[in-house]
Length: 149
Image (cartoon, rainbow, N blue to C red; front, side, top):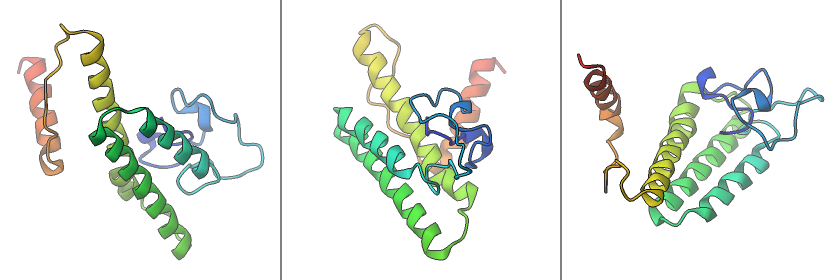
């Protein structure tokens, strides 16, 4: 999880600090100097970017590595844009550009780990990603399917 970045807050900095976002451990602890803890616009960007680069380097799949690099580049671009215009980032845009792709990457990495750990695991093989404009409809479909409605 991005330290100090709580997706359930729609891309806003987590007011409870970096360790309140559900397992943002490994961070520097509380923020006692009043600095912004959002890793995209605040002081933690370099650390956040380095951590994502570390994840990227651990991935064996070229597709997953490329996606991690794209996410890092998007975050850097959003940060530069906010600094250039001295304006806050639009939370929905930040969620779309960074938070949602990180969640998708996390899910794809977890799927790959399950596939490698257990040959009998029920993981779809070579599942193509759902185009973004259909993602919500597909999610609702599977929710209805799983609920038996």
